[in-house]
Image 1 (cartoon, rainbow, N blue to C red):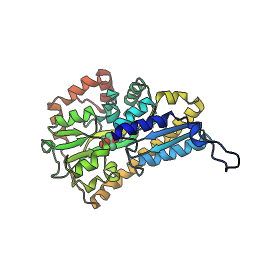
Image 2: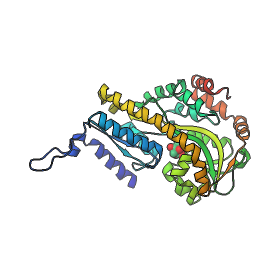
Image 3: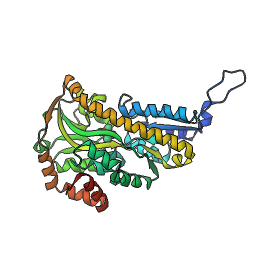
Image 4: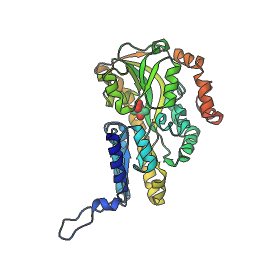
Length: 343
Ligand code: X2X
């Protein structure tokens, strides 16, 4: 019920032309700022404090200034417009113009987008950015364009995902047995955690804190900066440094809205968003150096894991073979070209 009425409201918003919202100067009234020619809404699932939103806001300010106010981007952070699944359908319909889904999430629409999230594929950031700024990323962007969305060139960093739990620490693959763990709404995540004998549950990010608090699940997995900004240390005790998936956000735009922008404005918007993405990567890199100490001081206890036990279990369960088949030989060859032989 609530979902329905919210959607109806969003639709009616989207139908109002930008010029209709601001109103011109009325005789005898103070001058009202001129309405932007292109007024865009950008939704995402993270709090304003995450580097993604800090840098996106700077990009929006830069775009407003470099276009002399012709392009305005308003950010709706923190799932204000609904969860990832809602925002993905809104960006397709044009209800919102921009969205930054994780690769795991956009993969529900563009399956090959999950290729960077194959378990234990990447060992470090040099490998990650060479692949995502190179052929692997190019292949994914091409697939995204086929569903009517525009993906900007530079992917933004979410990070290497780590596992947190409440009851007991996770040290090796054996500890995954039957573990109720929240994962994003993504077929690859479900497949991977099932292959590890866990009991994964797909939940929107907006549900993670409360599902841990009410013990619907006992564990979750996310990069440390997310665990920090979403305060997941308040509802989790242990953190296993598993580095099991590298995850990033694609900055995407509704294809029709993007094409409606004159090329000079497209150039300004692309440059601002891509450069903000590069700075956001540096922010996460800097955070990665300090975030563990901060989380420890807030009561989360950390342990290392035995990565080979996880890889062996995934191999034995046929995980790599299955996903090679699902992504296709071409995409898989690009991934293996970046990280070495996997299956
Ligand atoms: O939902 C998550 O776990 C998050 C925030 O990492 C994603 O966007 C996939």
